[in-house]
Length: 168
Image (tube, rainbow, N blue to C red; front, side, top):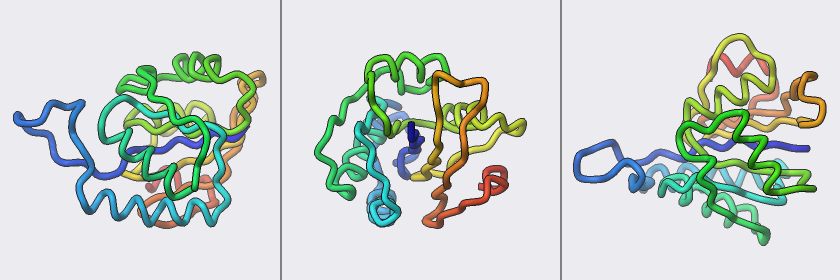
């Protein structure tokens, strides 16, 4: 299956005025991710399901992604993708979407980088930049084999060398 790990775009800074779960995308974050999402369409990204963390900034990112991809499929929000998302929760998420061959998960760091690293069997932790997307080919039934790196979108640029994971 194709698995796309999507970090939410740039959101307003943490403050006492806005609860963490209500932080929303900045105008700059929206615009940059809209541009990045258009390049994802050109790259051929076509998930069957886009699932989002329930936090506002992730839902907004998922909506921008769906719009840019002219996505007509499911766009569920799932508590599993809230901060603290783990490989075990990814397995639960997949069980909620049986038969899906292409899934985009919109969530948060450090969770997505940790999951990507675990699936790729990368010893060094890496971090997805805001609005970044990691594309993997992964067979959950053959998890011990690990995932295959397809590409990384970071800061508006595509990378096809897995060595870029530790520098972005």
